[in-house]
Image (cartoon, rainbow, N blue to C red):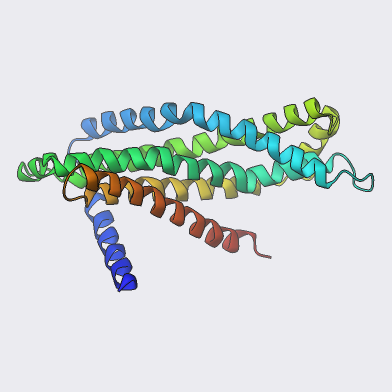
Length: 250
């Protein structure tokens, strides 16, 4: 029964995407809404992304340095491992999991409140494609701003790692920078961006879908917000594996 419910919701989700992916009727309104959503998602998440990135880089440096404490391993490898782990996994995945909680719950509760207060029904009566009008700007804004936040998180995590390594005495800053530069593969950044765009679409579309299908009152809005976060996180973890399997398998 649960499996049937899952596939039923999955079908509704794809129909929901089909309904919103059409040309906006008034491009000026769409552009204005997109800019507002970019401000909400990007600037609104700047602080929490900064905090998480610094401490993720700092903790990864301490833990990797602890495991490579023997003198048999070159010291600069700490910087190299911190670089690769943050660029390939920590920055895109951890950042998007956090954004699924912050951005996803906000989107679901906003649209869910509009649904239960019949504002969406009013738009439909006026002949407006409500999904396109309300949801598409959020998806476009998310796909633009979340990869930028992930790029910022990459840089800040490496800075946090360097500061942590120097303050704790684990590694000399010259060796850390040498490790950051050693055998760098630009594809790592490209791979991270693929994950970021995919996760951004998952967060915004799944959260909008759960908000859009809300029925009832305030209690159901809270339940939709919770479902949005849970299913967004599940989608991020699932596609993290799929994308890694596709692009990193040799």
